[in-house]
Structure formats: structure tokens, C-alpha cells
Length: 455
Image 1 (spheres, rainbow, N blue to C red):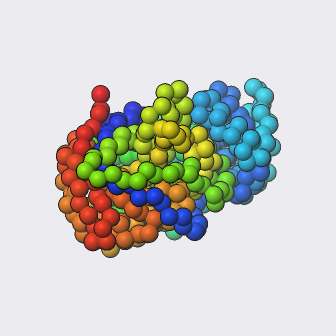
Image 2 (image 1 turned 45 degrees about the vertical axis):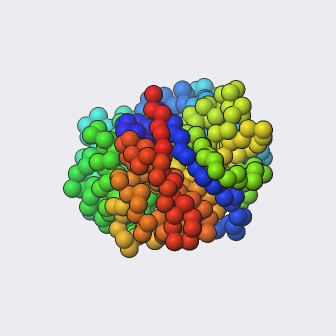
Image 3 (image 1 turned 90 degrees about the vertical axis):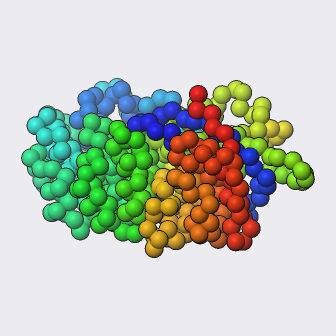
């Protein structure tokens, strides 16, 4: 998580490790994040066939609402990773798909429109960009897709959306927050810039999540402070002055960030249930004495948009498997995209060189534990324990500021049965703690990064 606005690059660090404990199997627990209806089939449309941004936005909100109520769902194929996941769902989960013809956009909308009774919310992107967030926010609570004024006629005549329930063309996010406050999900909020057309908007609609982007403003702080304790902010904030600016504010409000602002199909991918996510079986060598163990770990796997949209390309390089490698991954995937996590696990190497996965910073999402409210950190580590147990992860990265010696914090993490160790990174540079090692009161290690390779 070296500062960068879009979180598309990724850094590599290596950490001196003395002992890695094997993970004890733990019983599956209930989901933490909203999930769609159990998936049985897909209608696929390629991203290039979605037309303009208004058509993309309409399709994304329709996708989320369909995922909430139907097992036959929508999938947007954008090639690369997304081509892989739809085939993986077919081949490994028995989920068949049909592909929409090149000129089949409005026919596809019309086929799914009855599931929302033809309901739509009108917005006007050209006249008022804020109306995009308003329509997205209210799509879930009002069970209606978002339709831009520029395509309203086509949506009615060709798409079967003939029931306008609200016009938000002149409204902004503050109006939606004030007037529909009680309608929104209190444990998930979405932070998404208005210019992003269809990424993540499906999941926001499915989850009844208030959706907004207002920089590092007072309004943003008010929204976050009004959410439930230990809330997930899904998306990405204003990192123009460094991501620490908005993550710090979120952390102090008891909110953790799940980076996902460019993720596609999360509503559909969340509709998979997979209680058997396990890393490949490892036989650890007997630890030697008087030696140092070194592990190289690829960071930024906590980034959900990267997990579902590009990480697999790095992981598929032919050199992988010819050396031992550690990989961070988002512990939220058992809820948000379990089939994707299964693909990584099934394609990892298990000898003579091995791949091993650890939880990305700093738990269920990106936050700074030293800034988290003391009453809410226990809630977060319990949530993290649930996710790590279901993901067969036993080590978590931590990212914070000069806090490696804060055993009062790390005791709370390491008291959880699924968490055997923590890898500690300072915000910048990662190796600020120079490989220091501390132990919790129950003997589990906190191991600081020794070197970072950011070139």
C-alpha cells in the first residue's frame, strides 16, 4: 500500500521470520458481508457491448438488484481476469452461462426488467454529476435501477423500464443521506467517484449501501461516524494527498476500507457459497536452530479489485512455482468472491517450491489499528477471526505508524484462535521497524518487515 491513488501497482517486501505455525482447521462461520442469492446460471454481456457510461450504470444497478432476488444473474465480461472467472464458475461450480449478442443490450435489460417491476430512478449526469451517487444510493432501498436522462426513452421503449418512481436529477448526496437515512445498510457504505461508470455499483445496489464521494470533507466524517461500530467502507477515498489522509479519518471513526472501486461483478461473485476454501496441504520442515528464516511477500493482495481484476495475471507467470513465495490476499473473499479465492488456492504450488497466502493489512480491511477506537478494535479482530478461519488463513499483515511495540493492540489480534502471527509494516517505508520481533502474552510473534523492494 505504498501511496498511489488507484492502487494498481504493487510492492514487494521481505520479512525475516523465525517460525511459521501451521493453521488449525476451524469450523465455518456465518458471512460478514452481504451476499447475493445462491447462483445457478449466468447471462453474460461483454463490457464493449454496454455502450456508453449511462448504459453501463443502468446495467450495473440492474445486476445488483437481480443478484439480490434471483439465482439466474448477470455477469459483465471484461476479458482478462473476468473471462477467467466466468469459465471457472462454469467448470468448477457447474454454473452455465449464455452470452448476449453484440446488439442485445436492450433485449437483455428487458428480460430482467420484470424482476424490478420496471422500476427506475431518473438522474441527469450532464446537469448534475452528484445525481449519479444519489441514484446508486437509492437503487437498493427503492428496488429500482438507475436511468440517465439521456437514455430514458430507450429504457422505456426498448428495455421495459416504464415505472419511474423518483427523479433525483437535481439532488445531491446530502439530500439522499438526510431523507433516506434509515433506509441504508448501517454496516456497509460505498465510497465511489462519480466518473466511475459501472465498477462496484452493482454491489452497492445489492447491499443497500449509501454511495458517495466527497473528498476528505466534514460530510464524509459525519457519514462514517453515523455508521455501526466497525463498519466496512467499500471502495476508495480521496488519496490525492496520500491514502493515509482518508484511511486515518476512517480508522478514527471505527471504519475499515475494503479497496474495491474498480471491481466488477461483486454482487454476482458474492452469490457463490463455498464452505471448503483451503490452502493446499503443506508439510512444514522441522524448524532448525541458529538460523534465520526469510520470506518474500507480495503485498497489496488486500485489494479486492486487484484480486478479481489482475492479480491472477501476476500469479500465472511461468516463473511462479520455481521459488518459495508468500502472497497477501483479501480475507473478505469468502464473502465477496469465494470462487476467486478457490482459484488462487487450487493453482498454488506445493513443492518443491511453495506458494503461501497471508491476510492483507490490517485485518478485514485497510485501517490503522493504533487509531481505531478502543471499544471497536475487539469487534474488528473477532470479525477478522471469522474471515480468516473461513479462508484458511493464519497470518495477517498489519500496516501502521511506529506501532510495532504496541503489544496491547497485538494481544487482541493474537488472542484469536485463527491468528497465529502478525507481519508488521510501517506506512512508509515498510521496513521502518527494521525487522524487530515482539511476542504477545500468549507467545505468538509480531514480526516486522526487514526490507522492502519498491523498485
